[in-house]
Amino acid sequence: MPRLVDHAERRRAILEVTWRLIATEGPDAATMREIARQAGYANGALAHYFPNKEALIEAAYVYVSEQTDLRIRAATSGKRGLEALRVFLVELVPTTEVTRLEARIVLPFWSRTVTDDALARTSDDRMRRWREDLTTLLGQAREDGEVRASAPDAVLAEQLLAMTMGMQVLALLPDHPTTPDLQLRVIDEYLRGLATG
Image 1 (cartoon, rainbow, N blue to C red):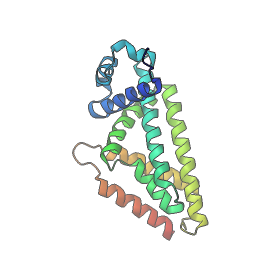
Image 2: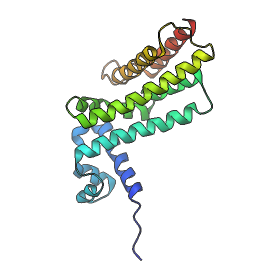
Image 3: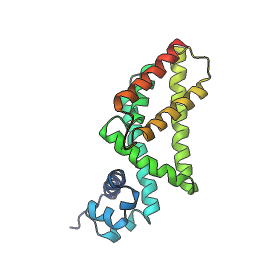
Image 4: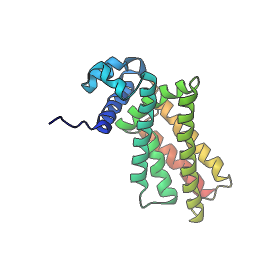
C-alpha cells in the first residue's frame, strides 16, 4: 500500500527550514538546493510546493507572521486593554531567541517590498491587521479608563507600530544592539505615559 503524503506538513516543514536558514545565514544562503537539502528532500521536490525562490521567501514571511499572530492570540487570550496591549507588543519585539530570529527574516523581506509589489501587498496586509488590533486594544483601554492620552487611537497605534518595528532593527545592530531589557522598558514607559496622559 503506498504511503500517504501529508502535503500540508511537508509544506510547513519546508517553510520552517526556509525561515530559519534565512534568519541564521541570510537570504542569499537560502537557495532552493540548500533548503531542499536541509529539509531532506530532492532539489526538484520543492517545485511541487513553491515554483521559485521568490514564492518561497514570501511564504516564509507569511509563515513567520502567522506564527507571531498565533503567539499574540495565545498571550492576549482572556486579557483586554493595557494588559493585552503590553503582551501584544512584547510578541512583536525581538527579546527572545525566536523573536530575534523572526526579526532577521522580517528585515530582508522589508527591503524586497520596495521593488516587489506582491511582497509589498503582503506586508501592507499584515501591518493593516496589526494597526486594527492595536487600535481595538487602545479603545478597550480607554473604555476601562486606562488611557488618558489626548492623541487619537489611530495615531497611538501608528506610534506603537513604528516603535516595535524600529526595535526590530535596533535589536539586530551588530555592535550596540538594543537589549531585551531596554526594549521592555521602552514599552512599559510608553504605556505608563498613555495611562498618565
